[in-house]
Amino acid sequence: MAKTKRKLKKARYSGIGGQAVLEGIMMKNKDKYSVAVRKANGEIEVDIDEFTGVTKGGFIKNVPFFRGVFNFIDSLSLGIKCLNYSANFYEEEAEQETKFDKAMNKIFKGHADKVLTGFVTLLSIAFAIGIFIVLPFFLTSLFSDYIRNESLKALIEGLIRIVIFVGYVALISFNKDIKRVYRYHGAEHKCINCVEHGRPLTVENVMRSSRFHRRCGTSFMLLVMLISVICFFFIRVDSVLLKVVIRLLLIPVIAGISYEVLRLAGRHNNILVRIISAPGMLLQRLTTKEPDESMAEVAIAAVEAVFDWKDFLKDKFGVDVDAPKDETEDTIAG
Image (cartoon, rainbow, N blue to C red; front, side, top):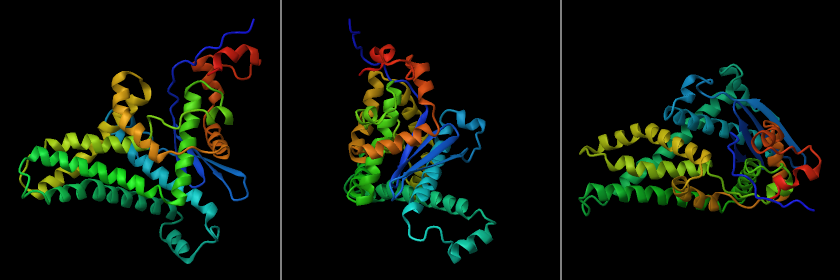
């Protein structure tokens, strides 16, 4: 008699995370990361390296709230590095070193790429602070003659901040290249969901997995916006300059809290976590799109380069994908 198929066990945390890049995907597992890119000739190029971040794997990366700040900086820095790597496959004469490249390498003794990545990271952080933190404050100040209640102004500032962020995400989605990045973003999520729900990592299983994931960078950024509303709500000073300075000083605090909330959401599945995760999951309808099978293949290549998913399935779900099919059929169905 045929065995009765049963539902998959609840999702298990894998520890892997990733990011979509130009025509590819970056996947990170602990200090090891890979970048898989679909080249113009159709082949998949996979680069594997290590990234320890600004703290070089120090103890502070395990300290609650503090680790969120450094993880955010590391993620941004690694993300920019991987984006630049993927862009090189589609830039004309990418292999030719320009006079500017030679001058930079001479000045920084061969470390020009690291210096430029660091500069772009700092510039990106400054841009984000200016657009999403400082600008909403000054836009809200335009209503000062009409609204005297500080609590109401704090709520209006928060609403403006969220509208700017969501509007920015929606606006860039009209770009042709960004649309494809969003599809690779969907492939990245599907791949992680496939593994974390106990399914063997095949194109078929990846394609039928969800493109939404709680540990998404989009969800983190939205959490930052929402938590900033709560933190800024309690600022009660008269000086405009001091209000701006306090907001800037609170950014690491907000990033630390947001990271811990996102980390909690990635490891648990109770009703409170689902409520907290709902806004970010909703926003992912903009930042992730359904990929095609070729994109799923790239995601699988990126995962397999840094993560032993077969060992993970065997350890967490009791699924041995190398065993005869009839022994695992009732376990992996779903």
